[in-house]
Picture 1 (tube, rainbow, N blue to C red):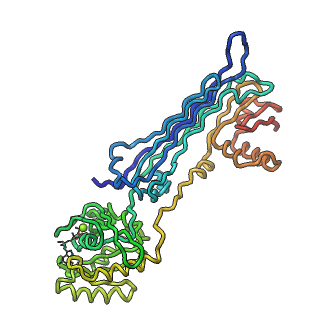
Picture 2 (tube, rainbow, N blue to C red):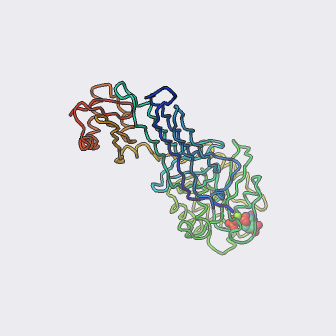
Picture 3 (cartoon, rainbow, N blue to C red):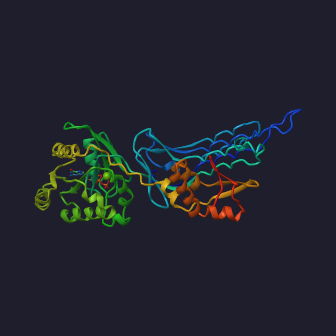
Amino acid sequence: MFIDRVKIHIKGGSGGNGAVSFYRAKYITNGGPDGGDGGKGGDVIFIADEGLNTLVDFRYKKTFSAQSGANGSKRNCTGADGESIIIKVPVGTVIREAASNKVMADMVKPGESKTIIKGGKGGKGNQHFATATRQAPRYAEKGRPSKEYDVILELKLIADVGLIGLPNVGKSTLLSMVTNANPKIANYHFTTLSPNLGVVRSRWGDDFVMADIPGLIEGASEGAGLGHEFLRHVERTKVFIHVVDGAALEGIDPISNIKKINNELKKYNQNLSDRPMIIACNKMDIPEAAENYKKIKAEYEPNGVKVFPISAAANTGLDELLKAVADILKDYPQDIVFEEDFDEFTEEITASEPFRIHQPYKGYYIVEGTGVEKMIGYTNIDTEKGFAFFQKYLRDKGIIKALEERGINEGDTVKIYDLEFEFYH
Ligand SMILES: Nc1nc2c(ncn2[C@@H]2O[C@H](COP(=O)(O)OP(=O)(O)OP(=O)(O)O)[C@@H](O)[C@H]2O)c(=O)[nH]1
Ligand SMILES: [Mg+2]
């Protein structure tokens, strides 16, 4: 079964907690802190696998979680890192975050891997919190949580040329004549039920890949027929060959048919109607086709759209058509890739991050939270300006107020990750 769009849930592993523990041995009392660090949580990694052609594997399995890091333990034992989860997808899969519909990655290179979620950091064990005056810290950091998202996986085939047109006009016949592909061909509508790809061995430049999709009908962009489901597979194609039944065997004026299909393309995605298009007036072996060919040419060539008379079945006119395609492709050497616009980093900073305050001892306060941690990473606190900026951040986020509510006094110590300072108003 051809499945090319699924929604799944992915979750990174959280970090393990740091341990609170003190060295113990015979004859030794009051041993120093020896609580180990928690392990790092596993990542969520996607790999573009050339062996896959559809997203059918995701039909039943919808949740993918990486392992959490193990907690630290006594005797400075660091917890094991959680195992990452690797999710294989077909080449050409676009990964979007479901809520924002933003692109997290476009898996276009065979074998490429992308880390979409990083596992949470492990917490530090109490051994890191000893100071000259506090030799028995009863505090250890918690492991950091990771992230989880609903994501949409959407397969968009990688092809240079897309064959579009109504059902039964000869798209698959054309593909079978000019490429190595062997699509099903028959005299009824919707013979093709899933896209077919073939490689054209070009005599006019680089080889190129051609995609044949199921026939489009009026209303396709709103879901009529099968076309809607498959239009996503021509979103990367650089050129369209619009195949028309020149013999109008089904009795409908070919020009109005062309307009209908163009309209559906435009409604599906405005960008598609700006792509270069060539019209292939097919079935020229049937005498009635000559008249229609003339009409189509008169209508479209003045607008710069080339019209080629062909017979896919009798193999006439195909070279001229392919050469014209090859010439256009020379101007489009780059593949069409969907830009990543999901920016986890900015989202985190702008969201009002919750923070936590611990008070392991009197006069000693620990502030934690992803927002403050990032802020420290940003700011050079050693400079006066940097420190002032950081103080303002603490004030604006309500952290100073929260410390005051906890009863902080002047001269007490505040520890924020690697930074430790005395509190003054
Ligand atoms: N006379 C003639 N018949 C053709 C030609 N090309 C295709 N046909 C016939 O037209 C019918 C439809 O051909 P297909 O290639 O299956 O058409 P399609 O556009 O892929 O159709 P769908 O997959 O249903 O959208 C078949 O009976 C073909 O044999 C041609 O050049 N001349
Ligand atoms: Mg077909």
